[in-house]
Length: 120
Length: 241
Image (cartoon, rainbow over all chains, first blue to last red; front, side, top):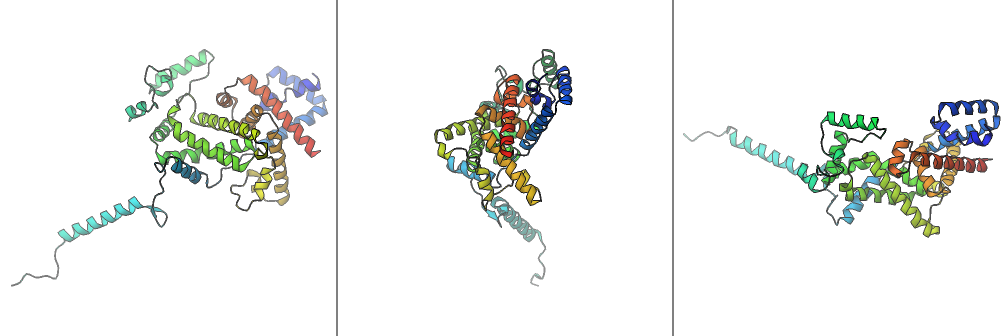
């Protein structure tokens, strides 16, 4: 095996997908060839560096998409929702108010009147 | 619910060709299909998990929470793929947003024959390729490898790359330089090789996933990937010598 043949297998060699027999031949060549060993180290280094290129989406990504869909759907989807203190949705506030009023009403109707005595 | 989904084309009618992947089948039948595929040397037919099926069903119903979940799950992967393909952050943001808008609009066309992520990344790859072609027609606005460093110095730049989380300034500088060299080398690759190297080496996907995304046979993927890796290595070696 010469340099070119050995280097043409580097991708499969690094991925671990080289057949056993070919891998042995490459290993034998590498043990005797410093040039190919250096090339392989550089090849591995390149692949390792590529693996560190992942990039996270910007924090505003979801918000921007929602805004785009809202515009393009002419307000049909992702309508901005009113929130109390920017956290509690308006529907929850309404529901809470209704429940509180109901509880107050029931308590008022079923509670015993105190401090009021019937006239003699 | 099922009738609605079928009406929208999400669950295929039993007589349709893709019924195998969509219609609920007993577990024994699915196991049999997998065993038959293995015996014939074919790839195992993909079966959606219950969670994935439910999420897609909610998305078909245009559930805004489900859509937000999809963006949270896959946003980084899609953005990263497109950013490395284009080499420009503003362009990548624009294209990645378009990808998710397309998903929102066309989710009914997802037939469940492959993983949702595969379908999504196929859309992302196609959008990125189209933008590369579009930018090539307007070279002054095209992918600029220097963009990475330009954007890094911008005061409102969000989401630092992985390398930027390293403490030492020297290491940070070196990592930024390596990233710039890598990005330049990727940008100089032919479009088909660029996609393969990003999918395999940046996003660390399996050859099977890459085959499903690109539609290329494994042999072609491997030979093009080898050429791409060698080209990147030579480019970086040349610049660092």
